[in-house]
Image 1 (cartoon, rainbow, N blue to C red):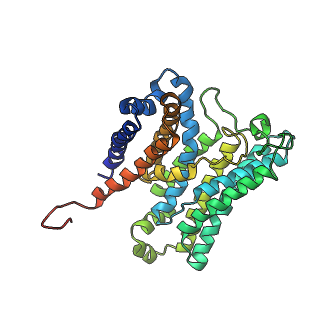
Image 2: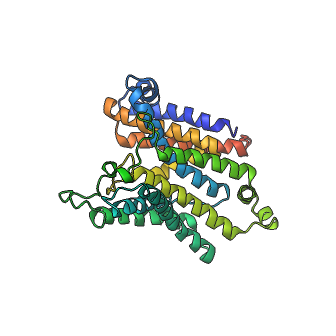
Image 3: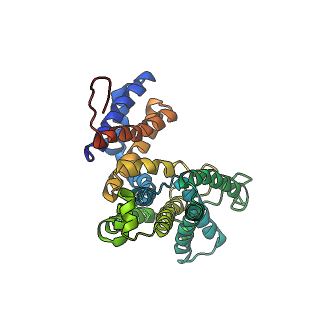
Length: 347
């Protein structure tokens, strides 16, 4: 059931999502086909397929970091804020060197992006280990603080002086030394995708072959046994939150220097929250997360096509994506409990 529930959740999402689209007056079969078929095999699939990697990379990168904490029972819900701060730190370094051309600028942006995400994640981490605060609430509230920083930078320090007063930074796609360009033309492959694949391999080796990975797994499954085995909970909290911050920050940096191209008020599009769905849909397993990230990227692209071709509202697509997590969590009950209807009771 543990392996079957993600597939059942996808099927249930299609069924009930189709019902939602029917209520909105759209052909449910056509809507589902548009979302899942058009990006892969439609008339313009040659254009949409590279977008799978572009959309999926930040989701996978963030979800891998979140999964390490989730496995240990450490709940970082603020990856969206760490994603934003990584983008701001990375773009800030790149713009600080403008218009100088150097091969060292982009690596410095990578380090800055990772540091920005790590720094933002350390706030809930330190508050948890020092004062016992709830990392869920702290990390989530910091998302809104990060969004205010984003708006402030777009209108202030990082604002393009040649932008005719419009909010937003210079376009990093036009600044060769700070541009996260395609490595292979026409494929969508850029350094963010490489980083996502490296993160998948790293997480797999860590969880399957390393003592730290064992500590993460045993802490999540049996906290008392973890304490008796000598696991240091403080170090584990700092590592898990710090690593998730690093990966979320890298995702933000690769996005702002590549597909997005610039810092804007609406730069963040919810990848940090969607990655939570990806992590659980992938069963917190690195390979599962990779596949779930591509599936979620497919719904993003297919959703955009459905909006343009069928006139579906954006909110309906967001509800459709949210159904995935809803049905996954609902069906997960069946992996732990057997429903037995008896005389006035359910067991």
